Image 1: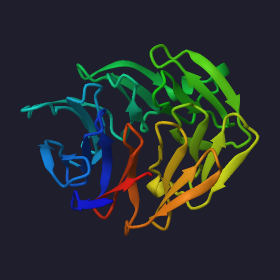
Image 2: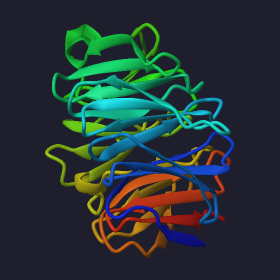
Image 3: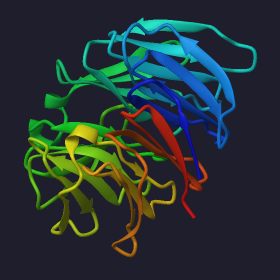
Image 4: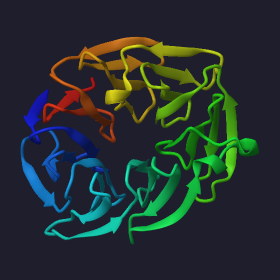
Length: 297
């Protein structure tokens, strides 16, 4: 329903505001732009990073934006009416924002250089806790990866032998675990109802979709590649959007276990995908510098 040139190159950061009225994009050009959803009306621009922007997240009130960059910093930006300030705090290299807690007052950052997970508070830009992936998991077997379960107060991780574990984000305590049939894979997305997991087999040439209510069944997704492993679950956990090696977006109906639509238009790798809070819009950003807005209905 709408497309526009957002950046001159990769669009790897993409986030809707909590009320869905604004869409923030971050690019390889080191610039953050905030748009009115569904139009080309540019509301604000933020500069300050010295390398490509990897990921961005809104705070719960929508007046702050957290961004992580290849320049080894994360920044907290004030994006309220009439505000143009930002504060920077240093994070280790190769960090990626995994997502915010449901109240959006803290964000999970994975450090792939030293295999640590950090929970950062957005109000002060300070870490609340740091836990090595090797220390998480039952009986000290460690985890391959950890990710946020949207709209729920829990984190999900997976061990090399396929054990999926859910944790309390404030204490790191184990809440429950499910043994999957597949092994040696990373988590790339979790549905809000914590039923569905999207992952990527290591070394990362094929995707997989897991239904935690049927742990013995795993659907392989050959066209889902680690090189553009953006993905998004709808807020009601009924739909999954993921990019393919052909640079299309597949809209998959989880309840019916079938493809609902193939969304064509991007000409290169797709690096970012996200549903609006009400589930009516899907935004995609790619290496062609374009952002496309799709009507889910």
